[in-house]
Length: 397
Image (cartoon, rainbow, N blue to C red; front, side, top):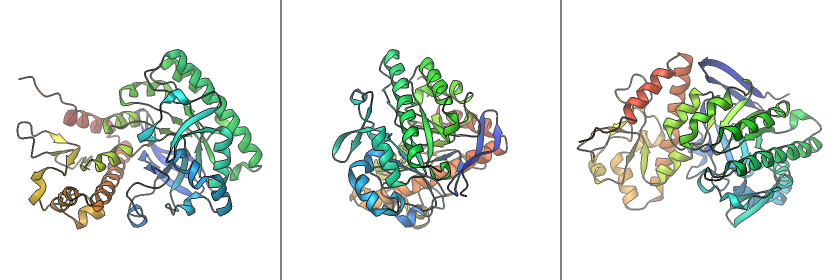
């Protein structure tokens, strides 16, 4: 039988480092997912993805529900990983969440969730998710979540908790019919919703725990950076032997906070979007490094370190050093800042390919440092150093 499950290897307070195994694919945690925007990785081809450490490949439902769709994938028979030539060793996860175009929540109903597809908005019910799961054969599927923006009322968030639980009950019922042998069924993650309200998140946890035996883990949905402190109430009640995925954090400081609260798998979308704006991710969490960031030559007045450098700046016109001296990615080993600046200015596609690759690679290196810090009880030092480096408020003149 194929191995599956979550194993905690080391912990420091509530933070944990471990391995998530699904169908013999193993991913070290905490780590970042590779996000597939329309069902395929953004600006990355197979040989570059092969240079990344093993990861979770996040396939948003909207990317594949219309095209290729259930019919094509059913006829293809070999699953979406093979169909889209995704990394054969990664854990593929199907989820209705899509970081960069989470649709307005007013379109969800009691039975459907609205997802953004290449052909516009589309309604998806648990039955559609079930059919797509059977056809696409992902390793992991996140049940539908009625995600609301943090601006809606507590009453509406409570309604979303009930709807999300109903979607899960329905999905589990259908999957149990389609997979008589539970060992062949994809791992199901239960969504914890409730926006910024602790009461709603608590109720969501209560309802998800009733299904805990059928779930391989939990996905904490739509958690925005300012609401990270809600995690403490959530994670301390979840079983330790299940994975915890977090959707929605867009800031590495918030991700470090979430790691210290015991979460395992995160979005990588923030570094991809930064790359598309011409920014290189230069955070260095290695305790040996002189500084966690790099100072921007523009910033004459405050040479404070940054997590991202804008390669659009003319300062890089004659800078023949790599994006990061310590980085071993394809972009840093082969190209200079001056060249990537030139690619951006001439609007060459290669700029995106190199920047996205470097950013994802360095994000994984940062997570490797986080795992080491947990294993050597150095996470608190890392958090303090991060705070001191990036969150220092400039002194008032």
